[in-house]
Length: 315
Figure 1: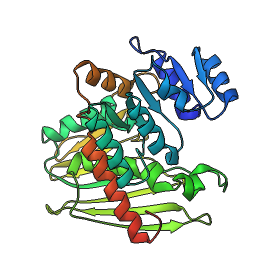
Figure 2: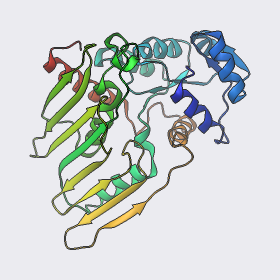
Figure 3: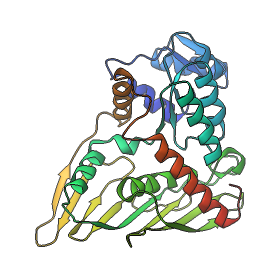
């Protein structure tokens, strides 16, 4: 579902996955569906997203529509008996996400939020290093996800009605990294700069844990900064380099030892890794991923709701 840049990246990745076949594409217009179908040699092209949900040969729908369309698209696919992989954020708020999760669980259908970062080899290595206690107990996470998007009030990123803003588009990454490392916090606070169209353009989030650990996270759509993250423990730290959203390199700093850098290239453009996870789940009869659990998606959405309520913006 969709024919934009992210959908194109996923379609390109699927071409290299031996046990994947794209049988249909749905778009908001016949022209874009035809062009996408020609580009990726997809036989069935639908001028509406609903065509994918109704296609009898579709087993799983990949949803890459704008944020505000996710709820309707996910529900339509689940009601049609399709498994669903939906781009982040799963929905605009926790209530919508809970509706999707309830329907998927009730109908025993697979549903996963496509936070692609969680499936990269480097992310798996990070988890293994932390589990082995290489840097001791985690005490702090710092992560920044800031991309300078040229301002255009018509662009979905700057449109509050379409789920725009830095938090929903980029904040999910540092939040997801932190919850995977530390779990959910005892308290959360945020400060934001709201732009002329009413969306959050630069946001700083502070998470505090009962253990005393903290996280300081930043996301922005009008400023460009190195997209790196650092996990700090009692015996050292791990730096995730080169866009921690799609990580391929870690540097481990252990007290008393020279830094050690690990290169872990990803497959193709990186999208195939979450496809492999979906296929593995379906083959084993699992309707939820252990790498990206639905309860964690729900928890992250609740965090973002709480952050936005503190700004007195729409939640």
